[in-house]
Length: 130
Image (cartoon, rainbow, N blue to C red; front, top):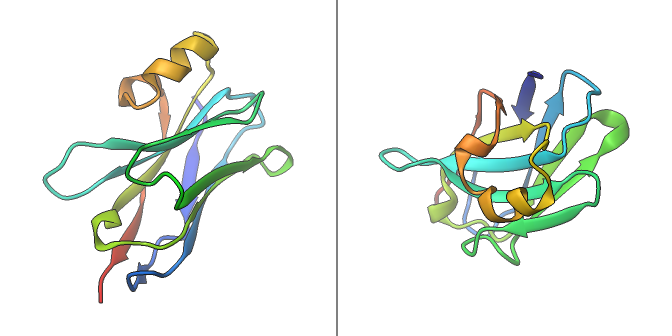
């Protein structure tokens, strides 16, 4: 496993933008990269994912068009650009990674399941409130 460290969480107002970062401790190639979030009393849900070798991306319907996931391979860092934030986006945000040995088709259908990923960060809090 690799260690993941999120940063960038903050308290913002509705309509604001925020960018989260996730730094990996190792340059070991991880094909599956993703952001999840968990609000109090709710299950952890997949927000966005990127298949690292092709830069293919997928998003939850609730964030499509507002959030963008990206990576900087040279910096071993993944990002989540969040625009037009809403109070419903309030949650602890986690980055996740996996070697991706199961391949692209598995990622395409299973990315929203936390069990797909073996490495997790500690989370960074995002609060959207007026």
